[in-house]
Length: 155
Image 1 (cartoon, helix red, strand yellow):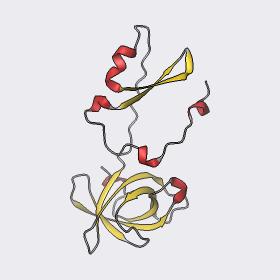
Image 2 (cartoon, rainbow, N blue to C red; image 1 turned 135 degrees about the horizontal axis):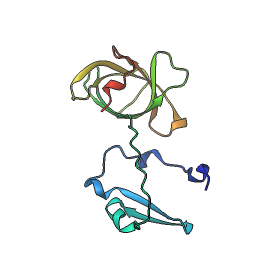
Image 3 (cartoon, rainbow, N blue to C red; image 1 turned 90 degrees about the vertical axis):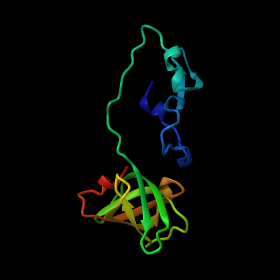
């Protein structure tokens, strides 16, 4: 098997933004080694019943960037919610590509972001332009922040 055999399209609306509740109800795709074309959709709580005594489990202990952002529009207080995807290419200052969910999103609108405790921070997010290459709802955003990278405001 080659790693590019594992490439697939994932619509942005299917990307989880919150953990499954209960946690063991998260979805699990099972591929049969004897027939890699045979796929089964299961849930994580079924994993113990799928394992054999000679199976090897490999645990990934890498950390995931806490990617959720929440804020309020300057002036009106209207809410914004988003998901950090990655740093923007050819960035001027601190710029990200993020999935943004807010009513009436327009370039130039500015939002004060909440910090990890839920309080308003000194970090200001400005919508720069839509980035349809990342999917619907994706925006290039610019941060004005006293922090080194702005990542500290993510949950």
